[in-house]
Amino acid sequence: MEQHTITLMIVDDHPLMRRGIRQLLALEPRIEIVAEANNGTEALAEARRLSPDVILLDLNMKGMSGLDTLKALRNEGIASRILILTVSDARSDIYALVDAGADGYLLKDNEPELLLSQILQGATGEKVFSDIVHEYLANRQHSANPFRQLTERELDVLHEVARGLSNKEIANELHISEETVKVHIRNLLRKLDVRSRVAATVMWLESRNG
Image (tube, rainbow, N blue to C red; front, side, top):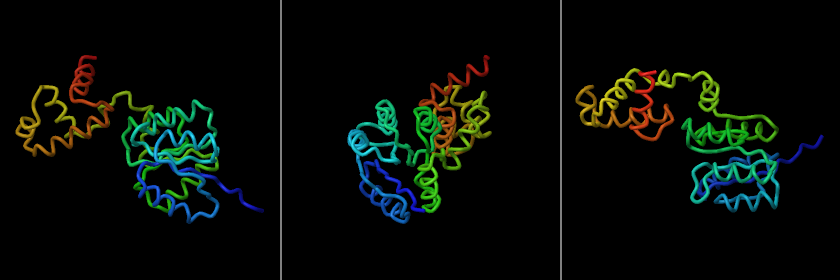
């Protein structure tokens, strides 16, 4: 029985990354790469013209972002399976892309063999997610208290941020380096899905008062 050829388009604004993905996909005879696009506008035009079975879509691109491109493709009724292939494992990105209609969310640092297998699974109708993405999605409904995601040290840092201390003052208070403070703040902002220490402080104070 002859196997169906899966037509696929790569959308990524880095030529080197597109070449690497192409080389990986060349290992799978069932996949035929029918187009490459280096931005969202090109992706839309090629998707209209070719209607590929699968679109591998990068998230962070110049011009239209992967999210904007995904929304535009869905708004136009493009029936392709759309799999996000990105370096970002930020919860906010994952939730936004899945909510916008992505059929999968895969990380570029996955093992090549696993990535190829997941792309094939996605092409055949399955929802495919890298392990950490799957974990975030599974826990999404259970995070009524987002502060449970934070480590004890991240909570210590957040408490000092809420007191209005600077990074240097927090470092002195907790006997850690200023660089470590920055890392903790970056991690807790990502976990709480906020973009600033002010927003994190507001969340923290509201949770304490609530």
